Length: 153
Image 1 (tube, rainbow, N blue to C red):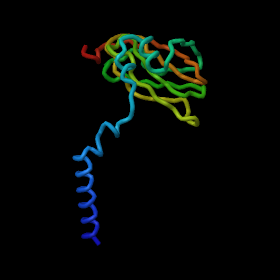
Image 2 (image 1 turned 90 degrees about the vertical axis):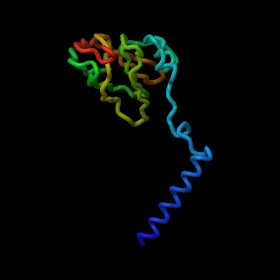
Image 3 (image 1 turned 180 degrees about the vertical axis):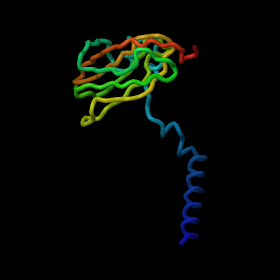
Image 4 (image 1 turned 180 degrees about the horizontal axis):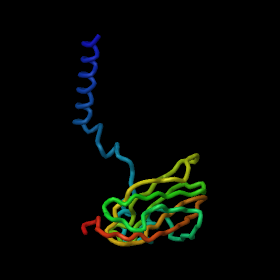
């Protein structure tokens, strides 16, 4: 039985190697699409427009940002964004970073509006959370002071 399993694995590996060398399996086909222009933007408005198609942000008190007021190390700043809205996506932007768009999460219909992650901040800046809900964009912001820079500082 072990011999058959070994032979099946060997044949499968060989077939995958042939398919990859023939160009049938390329990493480009496997990788998810990502908004290159949004990540290349140099300011928040351009990033939001490239990512979500509009810059019409409405301030919302329903978006809660949990982040430290003073981040001792800008290389690892833990943040949590939560909302009671039926969120389609949650995006995090940092105004003074070289690339303001830190991350964006597309949420499913039955997913709670909650995201917890770590971001890199180069200097003291506003952290902006943008929530897309019902085709409209809502935002909230919080200033985070950074004592040691994380983006090359």
